Image (cartoon, rainbow, N blue to C red; front, side, top):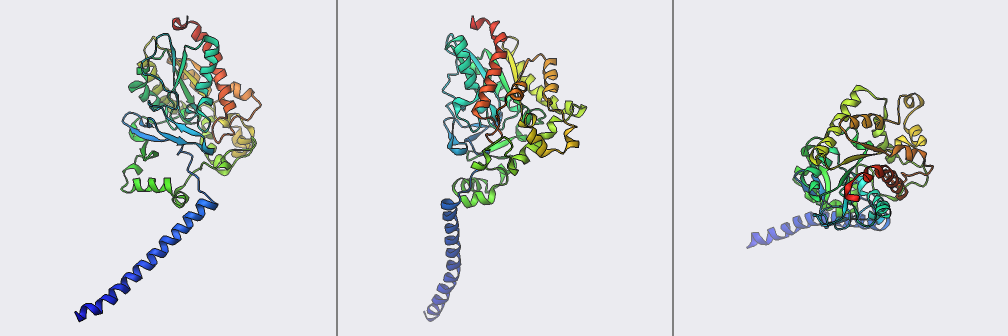
Length: 381
């Protein structure tokens, strides 16, 4: 008993030596977290805009019935089919003419309201012209590439009994995509997108949880552009360093045509060919080529390129290349670039995507160029 009485004070002292520093650390972390939350909230990265789940065919998709938020609190909700759209039955109602739209963040309507995205704007124009029986189904997913458009259509999209398929092909990401397998894509963990390798890490779920719930964790983990107010520009030549970094990566898309670029575009075009093949001869497939701001904003071009480099670029590329390649496989295209070039407004002041006005313009171009196609379709007579 005497030995025990001697050891107890020593044990208490050791416990005190452990607990006091630990408690001090926890209180310090808590104070930092509280201070950030009140005085300097740390925003999410721009990728964390909707809630994703894994998918065996596309790598990831929107989780049905999930809710997320874009910058400035704009809601990003998914319906029961995993689309940012109104509820749409899988079986097409009698008398309805249905257009299925495939695409990435431009199509899903990144950082604009659901009804402002160009597929819904297109639907309103079509209904005014052809009546209420027109239905445009928006199946776009932020971050998808042509491989995923094809995978989605082959495994899910064809079930919607569409009368026409429209592919929203954003040249900034889609023109030279090398994606050809699910393993090259991202995975979803806790609603967020992570690389395939990161998804296998032992503590990845804890990291995602902390990222969701802690300003301090986001401060330590953020590596790229974040969803802050500063990412929304005040004028057309108002570029943050983050924005310039994103656009600089995409500038080589607009180099003068070369054999290397033809090779790079072949995978993307072949993926869209898969959609055409799955659709068969009776279901029209049309590709809408959506331009990047690099092509239309001289101030951005001058910010990224010096005069000697500028002369090497052809800003009608890659559309001029893609139009020819799609023509070779029998796919018509709608080029939105000329209309954006002719419009004096700055349509990309919504981080890297279109403003609502940009979506309206794209919808009007697509609507006008769809008219001759729709005029010859029996389902609309």
